[in-house]
Amino acid sequence: MLMFIAALTACGEKEETSTAAADEAATPSSDVVPDDKASQQFAKKLYDLDIKRFRPVEGDGIKLEYDSFSFSPDGSWFATGAVSVADETMECKERGTWTMETAVDSDTADMGWTVEDTSCAGREAGAEQRLQMTILDNGQFKVKFR
View 1 (cartoon, rainbow, N blue to C red):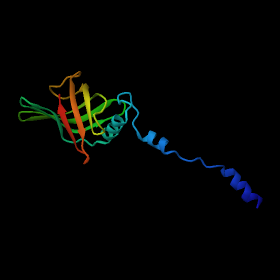
View 2 (cartoon, rainbow, N blue to C red):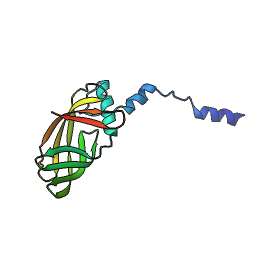
View 3 (cartoon, rainbow, N blue to C red):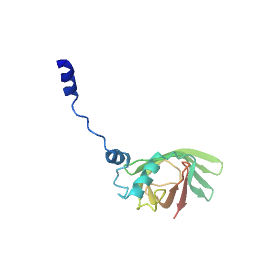
């Protein structure tokens, strides 16, 4: 009996888990994401996006298509893809930074993307794009360049 009491005492009291603490851990923490709830929800969806076959540049006989594109909470992005000019296609990689304004709602935000490093023909470091991105319920997205 004495061993049973000692075992119960060793376990100690159990601390209740807080749903607020769990929610806080699930929301993104980043210097580039505004603190409001809609922006935090948008950012979480942004990090979860699996972007494939995205064309940020097309025209004048040049086509840039990213095979993959991902956003990181530290305000960086990374993409692999290819540039096509006439009948020639060259694989390339780009990385850069992103910013966002306070989200319109949990699905839409105005963003800025800046190229920091590129191996894509015809692209230069420092190139910036302003856009509005909407993340759809089916995991897809829409981009409206400004």
